[in-house]
Length: 184
Length: 140
Image 1 (cartoon, one colour):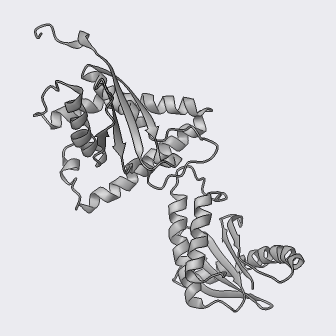
Image 2 (cartoon, chains in turn yellow, red; image 1 turned 180 degrees about the horizontal axis):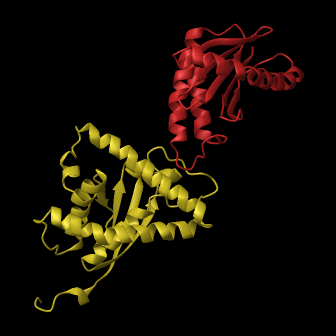
Image 3 (tube, helix red, strand yellow; image 1 turned 90 degrees about the vertical axis):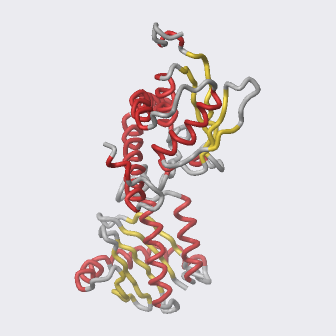
């Protein structure tokens, strides 16, 4: 498995080809969902569910690949690791962490460029479709496995005409039940 | 000045049309529109013949109707681009026009929501083709 990632650098041509394939595959997936489900809400829900299933598995791979990431003691360090290592590893982009709220439990990830949306143009029949909603699901699933219950949603989307893509993340609570009995 | 561009799909259906023609009388315009479509459609057989004879995507002028020429371009997936025009356009500009349109066409069909061989409804695409036409001096 790690063989595929060794070549992942900016200068490696292989990366740009598989990036297109990835975008096209995701596009085919969303197009099929659009055909299968009636309403935009249903489609968004499905994308979120699929993302959730990916996220709960992806977190294991991520933590295995970076064993020196220890426990995060606050949401700020979690956000930094998400942006600088999580997104970088799997999507090749580093979003900006910004727009913290006063309490410090909500923040935004601002993506200048979304690799899933290459070549995509939303059709007018689906104005409420959140094309990249799978990302929200992945974040929710991954963070749930590390005992953080979060809500993730889209604030801005370049496909809908905004300048950037903005994903907002809100921490609801820490899931205490999962802490092993031996530790405190 | 007649200049009519059409992208034709596999079932001889027009996927995208753009008419730059300008005529002094408006009445003539309506007739011209049907005529342009008719001329383009009639030349499709000649396109199919010509494409086997040339190794290039760009086929030069393949048909002539009164004073109008039809120039063709075939894409790798057998989509035909046709330009019905009079003698006011240079070969170079037509060739470059077709190449630029081909680039935008590829990007448009990569859209996952686009069904192949259906009409290209995207306004974005239309705007880009208009810009390309202007850049190459086609239809102005």
